[in-house]
Image 1 (cartoon, rainbow, N blue to C red):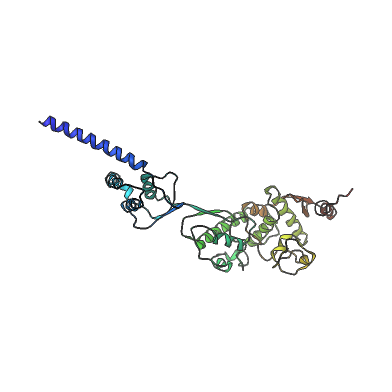
Image 2: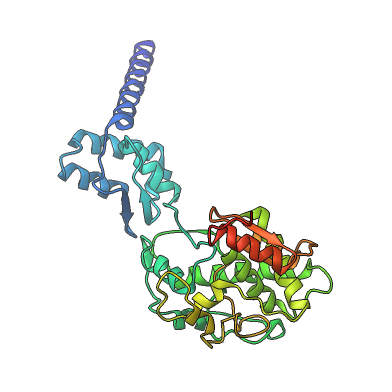
Length: 338
């Protein structure tokens, strides 16, 4: 009699195990289609509640929710769901979604601040970013978030150049102000590193001037191989007390730039115009990346005092004004000196 009972118990156990295995297989294969690319899991959400929701939507059968209750007794960690916004996986199933929600691996979003862009353009990027809490409406509000060491130069009066150009990752409902603070802290670290590694006898008095120089380099050339050469031209001119005469500074200070610099623009007395004023402009004119900071801190050792664009993104560098004028005639005016 005892042997029969043990046999029946064994058979029942095996049958139950097979049923559970079949049930788990069904749960693993039961598709659940989320309507949006991202799913926002609210605080207090439960596996059973989600099952009932998807049951009401017609995506599951009552038997699925019954199997899930049994499965959660075996795998209770799947019942501990973590709130957040999750990326909708392709070919999602009931169990794959619950595993995702229990993992806490919420969706990561990214925002990139581009080298050479202005603070206003950075603000527009923030305002257009998805799933980012918008708590900034102006560059003035951005400036209020900026911390600036007292011995790094005059306190900035504008947030221009004070965000490090890079890609930043965030989770849903992060604040725009939090990204600004991260980008500014990254800028401080990168700027300090560049300053500590700078060459001797640079005509720069502090880190802020190094940042200004980097922004001029960033706007003048997008070619990594040229940035240190551009830097050398500016350094050589500063050593000679020559005006920098860099077009991006003219453009930056214009309220209505037509797309082409005129002679009237070159004569405009705004403080950023390095055709009118000696030395560096009063502040940066763009966001900068690591390569521009490095070029500002470690310019090439050259005899160049001039450069002009070839029109393809590269430049011709010249030692003398005569050489420079010949390059201007060739690449700007389209005339060859034959």
